[in-house]
Amino acid sequence: GAGVSQTPSNKVTEKGKYVELRCDPISGHTALYWYRQSLGQGPEFLIYFQGTGAADDSGLPNDRFFAVRPEGSVSTLKIQRTERGDSAVYLCASSFEWTSGRSGELFFGEGSRLTVL
Amino acid sequence: KQEVTQIPAALSVPEGENLVLNCSFTDSAIYNLQWFRQDPGKGLTSLLLIQSSQREQTSGRLNASLDKSSGRSTLYIAASQPGDSATYLCAVRRGGNAGNMLTFGGGTRLMVKP
Image (cartoon, rainbow over all chains, first blue to last red; front, side):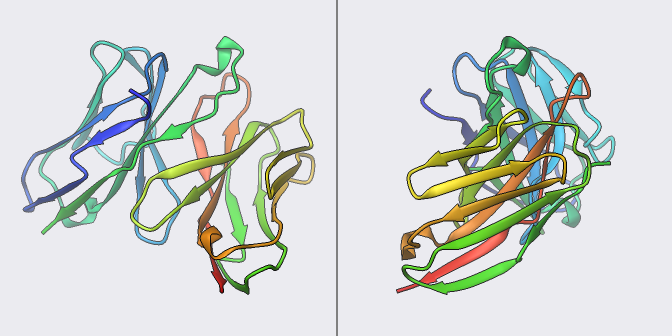
């Protein structure tokens, strides 16, 4: 597609439920990133994929968070046993891989706003 | 650990003013620095990207400079307009093989009054 697409745009769930957030990156971008942004703060890194593999998952806060990218394109961020503190906007971004000689400029989607009641 | 700070946190100016937003980072070993704009409830829009070997980039009324050795970048907005009202975020990418993550500052919330 023309840009990074994220669904759903808004998700309201109850504490303890399971949530999946989807990201469809820009066509041709091999690198995909998940970030989390709380109100009034800058985005915080969660996980980075190069192709199908998670090259850096150091930002995932705990083992309730997991992300996959099985075919190297669409990615799903999965949150188990949601807690109220998980409420935030989850942003996805994609780019060409910087080692390909390109600029490595990141392009972000509109985000998925998660509210855990 | 890289830390990115943006000053001021909020700024309100009358229309037409030239203004400067500041970004500082603690680790100068960066690959590039990117400035973004974020409108309320929206995602991030890339404004300018400066590679570590560059000193500045310009796009329209925007000019971003980078002084890697001192850990500073500035975003200059000329002749500000009400439509420039948004949050401006800077982010740095680590260099070498250290990974690909961007580290963001907390942003500067800009309001340009008509």
